[in-house]
Amino acid sequence: MKEDLKVYNDVLQLIGDTPLIKLNKITKELEGNYFAKVEAFNPGHSSKDRIAIHIIEEAERKGILKPGSTIIETTSGNTGFSIAMVSAIKGYECILAVSSKSSVDKIDMLKTMGAKVYVCPANVAPDDPRSYYEVAKRLHREMKDSVYINQYFNELNMNAHYRSTGPEIWKQTEGKITHLVVCSGTGGTISGTAKYLKEQNPDIKVIGIDAYGSVLKKYHETRELDPEEIYPYRIEGLGKNLIPTATDFDVIDKFIKVTDEAAAHTARYISRTEGLFVGYTSGAVFQGVKQLEEQGEFNENSNVVMIFPDHGSRYMSKIYSDDWMREQGFSDSENNVDAEKIEF
Ligand code: PMP
Image (cartoon, rainbow, N blue to C red):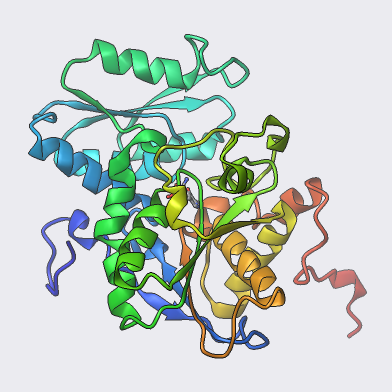
């Protein structure tokens, strides 16, 4: 991975070794020390670069991927972007099956990175042959020498974080980390990182952030999927309506939920206060930390590490748009200044 070179052979050498940054201003009122692992410093601007390179290079090692092979995945989000980036550099074809709900901006971003994008109808059942899951599976079956990343059900997802994110955090905190707080989507980040860190020190407490409308928290508590927990929500990349096998629920001590609105406001607050332009789920993770602190989870000796998964630029038409915030019924931004009301 990233070595101390002045010149890099390609952008892939810059994946990983992201900075751990102390949060000073937004944590002033909180007890303990707080650090963010800022994954936007990856060349594809998210933590998903780590799984893309790891899964693709494992397939190369096993001889599954050969020159001219195709890589397939079902995502319009960060994982799609990272896979497209790695495929472009390594010379593989990248096919992404995405839902017609995905924004035009996102689809254009994937095409910019050289991916072939199949837009599939959003309003069909997952087992419908037109759904993006089924389209991806069929393409994988029909194309020999293709690899289906399948991030929710691929154990290499958590393995990537076990081998990179976990050791980096242990080294960066000189083993002094007491709490790890991470958003859970596929669960790869939290599970792999937690597994490594708990092997070093089993007392480290691991807390997952879940969304209202997702089954993860309840499943962790009951080991049952409760369909009543499922309803639409706005945060992307966090929570799920099924149980991903890429999540190891045993290494997670507990989950807490955050609201769409609080997470959005908190992301905006982090950006303007710490100067870190972060994505929606970074707001969610710090919102969760604030709730945990109020519940007395931390003390003055706590060293709390949060993972900030991606960059704010991906959310310009969402949480960083005042119009979008208003359309959701979220309260107004403190930064809105009505020029007509200013007295000169
Ligand atoms: N935040 C964002 C923005 C994401 O795209 C994802 C991945 N779906 C996550 C958090 C959660 O990471 P993981 O899938 O490793 O649980």
